[in-house]
Length: 64
Image (cartoon, rainbow, N blue to C red; front, side):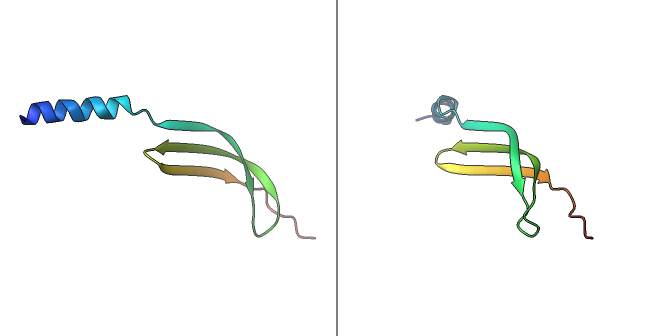
């Protein structure tokens, strides 16, 4: 089989498999101070691999 045919088959296969993805707001919890905050999340699931990234911050705890 010529290399161009193999490449064409591979490209059609990859184009047919569409990854699942999601993004949007997410809740963030601080483990140390037991306080909640707002954040942003992005996740992608493709070929059984799941990657999720969450970014956010929590308010500082006021010490009195």
